[in-house]
Amino acid sequence: MESIKNEVSIAIAREQKRDELLELVDTATNGTYYSATVTPGKTQVQTLADLSQTLKTAINAKQTKSDLETYESEIDNQATAKWQTLLTGVVNQIADNNNNQVSLTRNSPAYGEFMAKENALTYISGQNWQTLRELKFEEATVRVPVLDTFQRTPTIEANSTVKIYVYDTTTEDMRLMFGNGVVKNVIYSQVDIATISWTLTDGITTQTYSTNMWETLKAAAAGDPEAEAVGWSAYGSDLMDRALTANIGSYTVSVIYVVEVSDTIGEEIAQYEFHQATTKDIILIPVV
Image 1: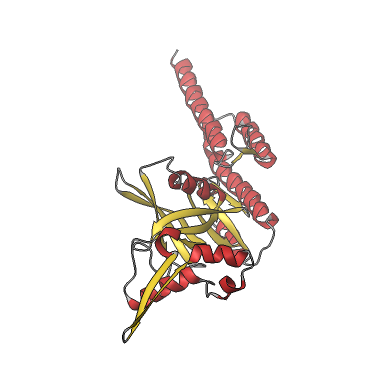
Image 2: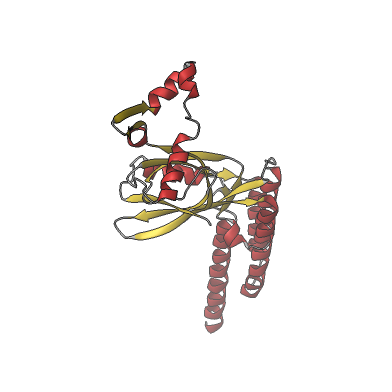
């Protein structure tokens, strides 16, 4: 009777370990963006499906708990190697661009950054499957608008590199979303800076001048030579640069910064900026 109890106890321990390793394989071969199984919202990757089957077949063939325990390190090694191969292939398939950069996105919490291709490959080669299963590398980027004020972001210009944070007004927590977003365009509020009026007095003579830059731009676009002669090119940024130099800026001026980020981060920013989540505020901090 005692020997039967021992055999049952050994069998239970062995099968518990087998189940543990089978669950480990499911975790190791199914990531945030790539999956060994057909799951809504994920991309099925055949190499991961093949690995899952290979590992599970080997696990089910083990006859002792000791053999199963020894095999656990092999699961880690093979899963890491497969994820490294998968993501290296993804990066190498991304078409070269002017900066030879790719976009990295990580989930939970969402974070992204641009990095050189060679740096991405080096990063992949140094990580294990636990880290790699949460990553996505892609070429696609989007440009999304972020509304701010000159008071909060006076030194940000077109082509500035910025860190993009999201601030939760309910918890007062701030989280880094994107490490090196690029500001592609800066657009100042028409209401704040489009109308120009000033007065010059010389002795007893006073002259008053007024220009509406929005109407002037429309006239210039329509081909009016006088409107075209007005110095409108880069007027908005020139005005703000002069304000900074003079230290008298109108800091309530509204500004739209068009930032270039990865697709996943762009979607999250758009949700906050278009008030689908009213408790979140996007904050841009220039990288010096």
